[in-house]
Image 1 (tube, rainbow, N blue to C red):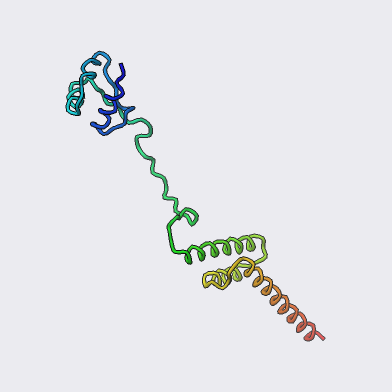
Image 2: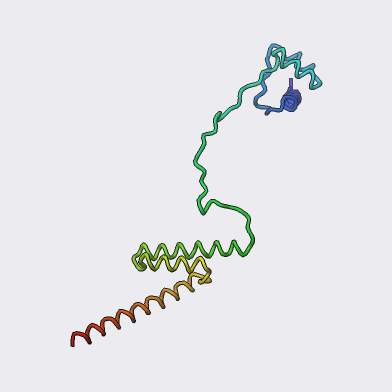
Length: 153
């Protein structure tokens, strides 16, 4: 006795999954005779076909909306995508430099402004800028030291 066709017909009729449908074993002959959707509905009302509850989690546990910068997967135009990628790389690099103690807060602020204004095309470009910045600071420090020495003598 294969009742697979009846089960799939019942699933279509009741708009539920096949796994939720159970036939009462004592009334299998009636179920076997059912051909139409109307017959199936009648058997459900009579109690020959039982519908089981939904399995699994009954209530969706609401989680916080996780919409960090890495989670946003919106389609945007190519130029904006490139800008976002470069900006994220550069900001990550500046953060690393700050954590290592190679940059102070003011420098980070200035660099982030420049990143926002697309002053740097890549991380190498930013590194070159930082190298120049270091040289400039070193030269300024040397000048101040020389001026102090002149004042002393």
